[in-house]
Length: 345
Image (cartoon, rainbow, N blue to C red; front, side):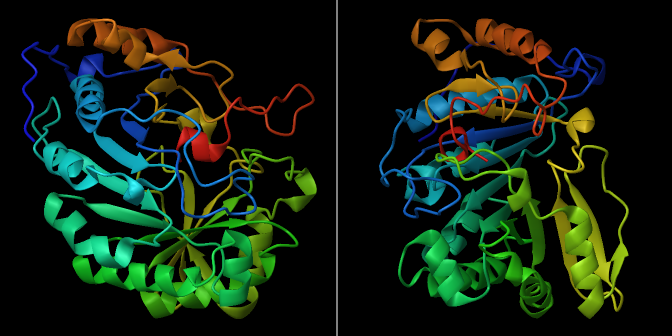
């Protein structure tokens, strides 16, 4: 599927990295390749499984991603919706595996999935060049899990996918759990044990107001401090030092050194000041923050005939307007125009 793009891209040096007006270096691109999903998780979507927004051709995603990489992006995470539903995913990863960063390094390619199709696709994804995978899994109790996903048999499929990904070498393997009081907050201790037994990094995520419905309230959020306190009662934790300043999760290991837990706390302990991320939606819009009120139509410019240098200049200009922070919990907070499934995680 190799595709040649004759336009020479600008040379990026460490001094000219993609940087916003707040001095944050942007090196992590999240790309949604579909907003379709085969689950209907209660905290995520209320509509049907199909796409609400158009999908681009795989070659278009590749060209746009290459343009971002030319500006210093080092990590690309493919998301959805459910990216494993997308035809051409393996070919896209094969092409991205051949892309080099401006410094000549290997592009870091990751993927977030609900895991339902992962048991079959883990080995081909690894062979194509995927480095790591994160699986969204919101309960370790099968009935609770299937009440959340609203798909019978989903729990066994996801566990099989996690084990297949680990066997394929898609590691470190992360399992993300969005905690919601009254829905799955009874799963915390079980997930701590799951991390140890399955040799995965379990990451708890505070529930954010990104669902399609109006489920979110401050009271439903299970905070970082509560999670740590509850796990400590049964399996004492030891904090781990962050690997880099822009790391989103507070990391912990267990007192005996077996297993790892991460907690992502955007509501109670926001990390906006070190944000290194930019997002591209499935229909080719740049979002500078999950909670942006404005989108920037990069694909529209490409379709209108702009060359790669022009697209790169537009990306640089757009990143300059990246928000300083979100405003969750403040009186003037507004939910974004799209829910999480239509933005891409």
